[in-house]
Image (cartoon, rainbow, N blue to C red; front, side):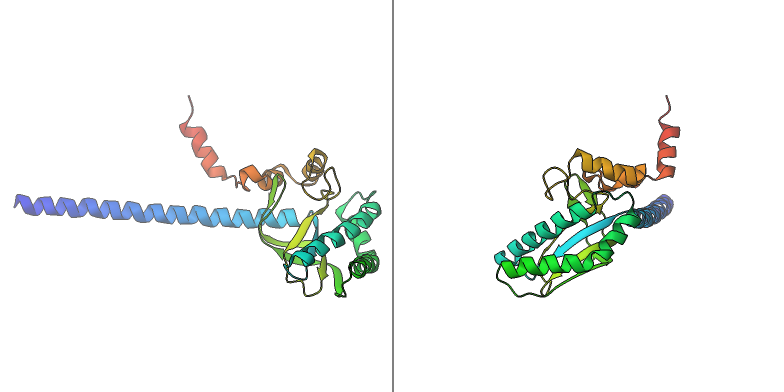
Length: 220
């Protein structure tokens, strides 16, 4: 009889453990869904405030990759002059669209000088980007408006930066944004959005209910 009740107690505790484990899994699932939703919302909000500059190479051969950088330099130097006085995303986008024929002409001339006959296209359009790191900043994956320059078949690795706010043309041109470029980004984004792209924080999502929990149970 004692063995029977002992077995019943064991089963009861196992049921408690199974229930607790199930509740934990459900809770973690809810947290993950909330995290995913908030990360997606953050990406959309960031995308609404910036314009990216994107150059895609014909292929991944060393020569095609080198050509990509020459096209980047030529187009970038031109756009740096054209956008020097820009004060808003709308103005930047408008000027860029207006200058598309010139951008294509500059890219074609650069390609011809280098001895190639690749076609080239340039458009301001919605582009799907994977997660991308630029200096101290990591931009979440998603769709962004970009000046999209495609050389030839466009099957090679791409180069990119943020054209508005101006993170392309400061300091060590193109390779990594300097302090002034970071300040330009900070002025455009909200505090949470700016925090979200800092590389060290990996777009940390602030769960308000977790912060409240910590405040309650860590009071002195």
